[in-house]
Length: 102
Image (cartoon, rainbow, N blue to C red; front, side, top):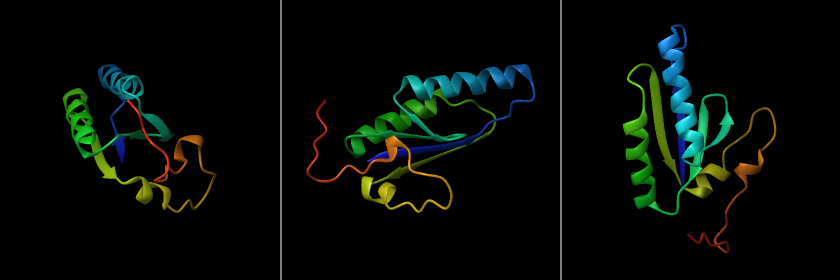
């Protein structure tokens, strides 16, 4: 499974910029990789893990702005069409023969 986080946070005021930076730092420290600007993704072992990370995300989200969270299967993520640019290393498809061990 993958969690896809997309956000648009205000950065005009100093305090808003501070909250946006704290949110991005939380994402990185929690194991998310930047897919593109304001779009981060994280691999989760299963739906339960995705729910735990969604709750953590919600508790660390700033009050202003817009944040969307999508839960995708690895196949859905791998089947994404790229209109411009190239796949990044974190976009590698995890197939059924690979195991995630924690």
